[in-house]
Image (tube, rainbow, N blue to C red; front, top):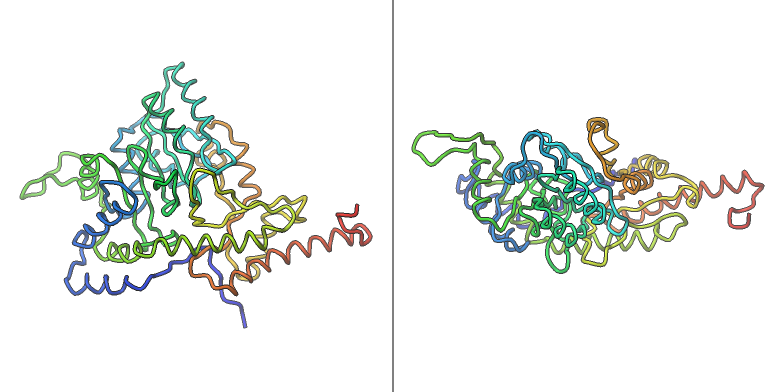
Length: 394
């Protein structure tokens, strides 16, 4: 009998979601907006420590509105992390802006603060400061916000945080996403909590969030008829999906604990193998371990990241490479990049293992054994090539 598929990060319901959705059906609040949307916004704002939040149809929609609301427009440069998913960059292009990609640092794999400061200093001298900076918090770990925020403040650059992957993480005791002018989160099906599809925009600026809600509802003005003085979008979250989000938010801490436990299991098993290095936890806060991510040194391990991924896939286990840096993507080949070597190496060696909070112990062991099997096979092959002498004895 074929082994069941182990997914990278599948949805995990908490028990209250069905009752909350049933409530939406019973009240006939099916169309966009409604009491669950209002409740989800208020509860989420309290959970992350932001005074205002707007529930939207996706994290991408939230980032699009965030950038529009801070004034990004045609011809504007926007600094953005290179090691990220394209959804962190596409909204810059939607608005006619020009992405400028910034390399990672190794402590957190996120945007390098030293490169940010150097870049802003050079651009200030040249009179080419960017309009904004999009700081991505990667794989459940906060970037080093402090020095980046300080550099942005010094040069008058608006800080926008993409915390789509970092709900449940901390930075000096606070939630990433609440430090900049505006922050965004994602509730896509693979995130630590999900509404099946959805996002949230947060800010201390009440007017900005109110404007976001207006733009997300086709920018309809206050009038008995349909009056529009600006272009809007159909970006609001539905009341039904917000009901799911409210249930999911209640189990957020449980989900973080489960994913961190997954990481620890992998660290204690595959993390002990030669050439394997687990994604570090930076000293400034809690890593949610949304995804367990590691790097593989092929010289020490005996096989490269892609050989491990393919072998796992052959065992019906989903694993994925680390994000391919944006400066290496064909669609952004014309864009400026600052550095890139760190992101490139992380992509070359980086692998994401199944990390769902609903993984069973036997599934985790199956993943670990799949990785160990690749290492054993590579070691045996190398020993055979050298007359049965193990690599450690040569």
